[in-house]
Image (tube, rainbow, N blue to C red; front, side):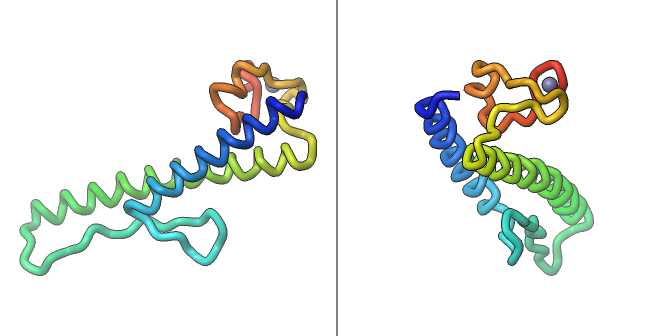
Length: 117
Ligand SMILES: [Zn+2]
């Protein structure tokens, strides 16, 4: 794979990473572990009605799910950046064939080709 393409991909992924971290930071806290975030419980005011509490619990559930998704994405980005360093970027994890450039352009941290997805 040519260097120009790789550096472009790297740039894209750093931007992705920034975006993901920003989103996470809006409702979660980063733990001591790298790329490990924890969603924050919405604040419970004393005196909230049961109905409001139910809403908050629901919201917390959504935050947890979103936090998981964003965190996984973040890990994928890091793995892909690591692969560029090792010269193994763009190889499908399942079939070992090169992932088409178009797919990598659309989704730089792709781990598999479209067939193995
Ligand atoms: Zn494949």
